[in-house]
Length: 328
Image (cartoon, rainbow, N blue to C red; front, side, top):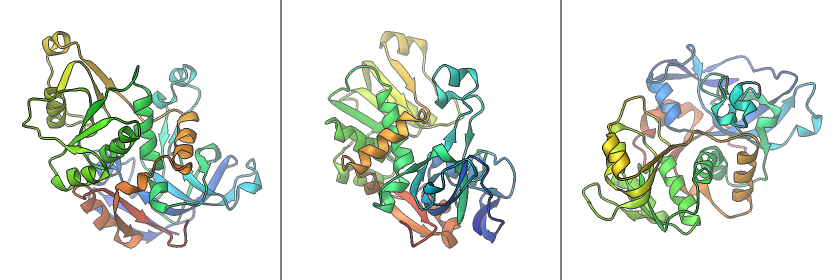
């Protein structure tokens, strides 16, 4: 099969590799398309070191089940599926506490197990979710939308009437849609003004980093950099909540005086919990309540995957790679 292989940081080649073989409880998925996100780009750049080279990236996957393991019902062959790429062990202390998103032995497609930027990928059967035929761009957004919807569900109490999103990349744009669906007055900030313009076209209002007022009871940082965290903390109201989705290993500054005197809540949210969160978001999209594909702006064929990664960080919206033009 053809596969996009990261041979070293910053360099991907498309080459022929052996087809993966499903284990007894696995399904073999013929890949239709794969969305690109910040974690993929971090592995591409080498800031997140791949387990080995060459490495197969990609985790926001949809496709069709082509074969099944011996313990999987044969009726699954032919299903259109979206892959849930974060796979908990169900044995560690965090899993036993009912928090599989914090699994201590989690495997993640494209991060520490082979990814989906190839003709085929193997995943455990329960992590390939059957979906109805629909927009390919909606399907590649199911996984990142689940991250966003789960983060909002983890906040206590009702949402405020307005919120600020710092970082209007793909995740920030999906957060715009999720908050707007809930009736929240959304403001968006990004250094890339094209992204702010896209957020505005979705229904958000542009925000400036230079503004002192208004401040917001809820600020979402979808970038997680020291700079974005500084902007977010500058714009949060007393007793407000800062919800952080972006991941960056660099420290950011906040004094205990600021935290205590302004009585702030800092809340991080990582992925989602199996099996409830993925099913809930699939239903949300397929019942017509949300069209996450609206945030996609750049489509590439597998042969152009190098350019897709090089351009993803500066693209106006979400980028994705079409692997099989016949799907869905």
